[in-house]
Length: 299
Image 1: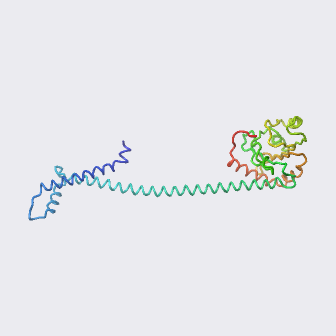
Image 2: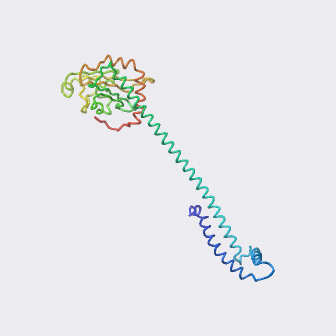
Image 3: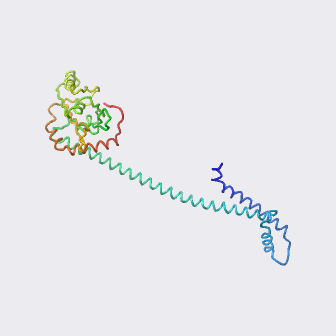
């Protein structure tokens, strides 16, 4: 009730006062006609004015009520003017706020576009560094970077992958447990793990040999079907260039043994350590923003 009176009290009072003024105007006209007599001395207007002045405080006549109603109507009208002025200010402020929001949205979009472009640039730079001629990299190969996104994670998240063969680049695991496969071995040991075998990757001979290699590292063979029939794996862990803390693993794969050049890969990674570490660090931050972890492992 108080809220209603606060918001609508004066407008309602003005409306009532306006109606009362109309009625009082008629009553005063009738009252004056009844109380004035024709005379040659003062004019009828002067007589009416004198009569009204003489009855301003006489509440037995409609004159004081007319004054009160007029005062109430004026107060309501002034309040209406003030409210319209405030409404105009609110509209102007609303327009300014909308303009500010649009400007902020445009700035945020431009910032996002800039970060997206930087993400693409980082990917291109890593592709150029990691697949140089010295590595022996060709259409039978794939290079992937897995990064630890949070210290509490028990898996590494894929943040970069490249292969000239589209099916190898588009498919593959998004996450790898830190105790699984060649990647897990490189993560958990001194930072390097290599495996080669000429057998069919789906054969028992291949799987038994990989289990024999992974056993001392306390890592298990991948439990999912792999997306690339690789016979040669070479994985190297990398550290943050500022803190020295281990962040992830770079893993090279090839469907044929003898294609990848381990010495060439080591040369590239050793001579470009600072750039590769810096690129991977920035790439990990942006990748987390643009490609949030789906929360489940995919093959």
